[in-house]
Length: 260
Image: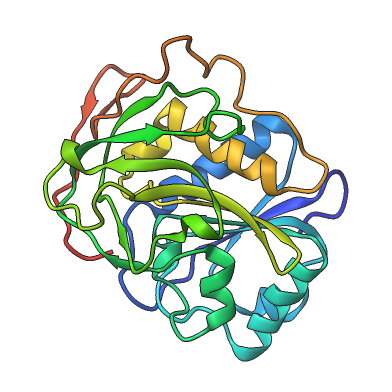
């Protein structure tokens, strides 16, 4: 637990349903961002952390959590964190979490419904006046699962980016398909991105900048945007499910999945 310096970040990764193979890569990405930008990062799967209080953390990140992941006491701990002005960030399968707790669904903004097979597609960046999107162009080619949600949250959140369903097969929401949004709820600043299924995504510079921007927006006392070097006047290069490693090899796409 952080004891000195700026408020820390708690990355929570408990799963009681489907578990993403990319979770360790996501943890590593958040640790790298913390080391580069001056905040401590703790990662845990223990619900007891929420029962014992979250005062040391400026933000809590649910990183591809799934199913019921909090005890009744832990739910109250998260609610208290939000009421005290702490930040909350959800990544990818955070939308597949705590279906039976209405507060969580309203905190996140929308709940997962289904997704097509993993495939390339296009993110339409509608709002670039935000640290999570200002480094991107109006179109961001990405490879992911393209989550559909049970509801369109546009009336209650600020939508930053949406899916272009004409760019991939199997979309189920039509022309209004939010993927990335922010809002305030229960005292907390909230950021959610539906992207982040693959391991390779967390090694992608533009996606890391996206995560950092969301985190900076929700953390008390942290302002700014993506890390230096991540911006491009023409937007982000496409993320196609592979990434060149420092050693020069190519990392291939994981096989398609049909569960969250």
